[in-house]
Image (cartoon, rainbow, N blue to C red; front, side, top):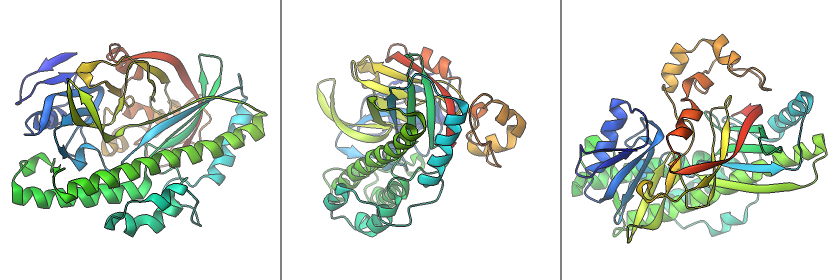
Length: 380
């Protein structure tokens, strides 16, 4: 970790290097009038909207929608099974059945799906507007970097993993409140507009509304992942004969939470970062074609007890589709049951940083517990 002093607050950087635009975004965070102590930048850092992905910052009595992200509650769930081995044919059967049972990409369920949480939805305009659609979105995987996979752990167990978030519900909530924050910022002049970090003070009704709406999206995202992995495990059991499950780990990596740090309660924004309290289990996925890790947090106060959320991109989605050769993309998935990249190469392994190097740079944030090697992937 090194410290950079280019803003009002210091920036603590765990990355070996950082692109100029992402560094400027970190400096903008450090200059926010309500930012607290310092800005923490994880080793998977890359440019995002307003705030770099792989960033952590604590705010005093304010929330920044663009510092949570457009996919509120995006995260990963991993389930340890009792199976110790699985054949390529079984992997193919499980993933083929999963592709038929779980809506992927921009597809949703044809009928509303049950979830008790819908009855407790906050009475907020944007939530009311999206609730009927959300009932069909829940238990769907999504697109882009969202995926379901079968992994071989170095603990001798086969694991299942799902990366997904709050679907279109979270996007609509994020977009609505970022627009509202911009309007409010224009009149209150809290944040320079070029930062794209418009804030919602919690003393005002819009700030309290966003807090309630965001937390509902977090609950929705967690239930979405739970339903998907339950479907995946059910299919896994039918094919493999698995009868018992091991531990289940679920983490968010786009959210804000009220926590105590350095003796004060503050709103910690993690955008492409996860909580890593001492001894807390976590998940750090690589790309779809590389290793992932089950981790144990070390509770490092300098990172606001956080770690990276994955490997992190080394090129944008647009650049990946221009620069990556399709044959090279599919070669990078060699040995993994996968249907192949069809047109969109933005999630191919060459678009991502080396996960082993990312893990090396955060040895003071997390300790690896189980290494997961991908055996088969269903891409959203």
